[in-house]
Image (cartoon, rainbow, N blue to C red; front, side, top):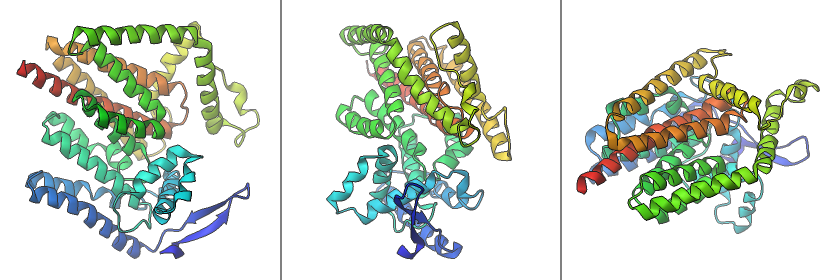
Length: 401
């Protein structure tokens, strides 16, 4: 199928591949092969009684969604970053036994490491923008079946996990956001089950793919160990860690703010920069630790939570706004219901803090509605799944005492 790819040259004279999608009938045949191959894993899981018939048929239905997204409900151009993942993944598969090729990690490693994982997932072909969508959907469905089998999710959360528009879309396209969500939920489970070797392994993968989210995982681990630890010595140690980190952050506040601003201005230019107007960046205001910083933080957090409410340009945006409202209602209802259980209050407080840290970390640096909805879906569903897993593991441990 090499004829579906053509060589080209970018503005800097660097060679790259331009991905050309085959005719629709060929795409359907090849992608049906991918669907059949990945669904065969669920068949064997059913055969060996790992999952029951109901979960098997649910998995088959959930795996259909990549057929319905790219170049069906909307063009792949709506999410143009997909082309990078498809091309890099195809390069990985073509150079899988070439040790020299692993120099690909030198630049653009976040995309390329994700592509490395995609490239080593069993697929019959990688000939359209749907292909990696099947990989992402497979990983998500496996995670979903796993936590359902463990009986960690409430009915409302199960329904949300199955029918959520953002989960369906972002786990069915050729991006890394769904992979990040799967890794974060998996690491949360491994930490809570004290499977530390696997935690380190998957934590390193997350670090190289999305270091900001790795930082959020470290925050979660520290808070859990400090306030819901098994013994007083561990709790005391991690409380000292929190105090030490707070002091170090205060002493290095200028350096932290400088680093934060360098990331922020880059994303601002990407959204409003020179390609639109030479003077576009004149309106940019760097962050400074003062009273106005709190105002900017509150404004940014509100925008992050409600985007794209200010600029809804399609029915898809309306759906995302409605879904966000539903998610917030689900989170509030879960916390309100469980707060009545005194022994769960520390866990609820931890996850509320995590929500605030997560939203603040991203809201101050992202200006694009599309990026906001992508990153927000990962954070919110990590909190929902993570809290449900945490709560049920904790309650089961308490029952054994």
